[in-house]
Picture 1 (cartoon, helix red, strand yellow):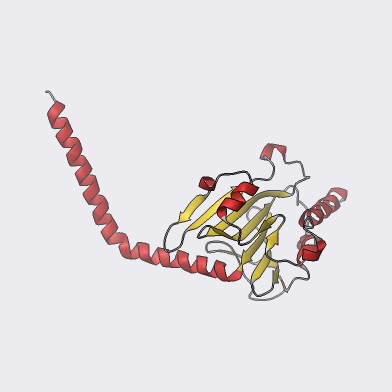
Picture 2: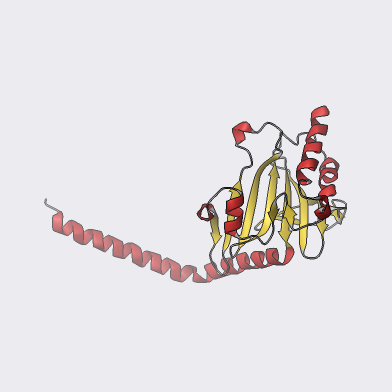
Amino acid sequence: MKLTRNVVICIAVTLLCVPLMRAQDLSKYRQFSLGTSLVGISKQVDQRPGDATLVQQSPATLQQMEWWPVPLNLLNGSEPVQKVIFSFYNHTLYKIEAVYDNEATAGLTAADMIGAISPSYGTATKTAADAGSHAVTSYGNVAPPLAQWENGQNSVTLSRDSFLDTFHLIVLTTQVNAQAEASVIEAAKQERADAPQTEIARGKKAADDLEIERQENLKTFRP
């Protein structure tokens, strides 16, 4: 019980690392701000922009970068966040997803987590009791939220992965997130439309490569 209480306090203190005057700023998570460039975030987490994973290149460039605040073998409860996933739309940060370590949050209820997060983002505008609420955790995966904070431009969502038993906190720019989701749908449509031609091109390339190999072997083969 004491450990659980300490973890709640730790989460609250960690989230309150920004000045109190910005306590309800829904565009920030810890020292990270939505709208920061990929280069800027890379510097903050001591990585290279090239370390970001390319999710999609067209019709919009989508990238993700993972940051592990503490190496897994050193995680001892003092840092409740296991990893942070940064999502970029055309090289600009539009979504931050913090995944909390399930051992650090063992025993914590939704109310415990909401209570720890609310000092940073204010009173939740929606809770699990609100019917019809959904939270997009990552490109199409939907989890029912435990609580949401919204201000028209940005939103913060607390959810729980029932399979992995992990809490997730997602901070995002609402409009850009919608654009990113629409971009993923458009890319999927284009991929399906291009599939026949892509398959023809793939077959032609395979035949051309085989012919090149055949010609080389004709020159060197001796029975």
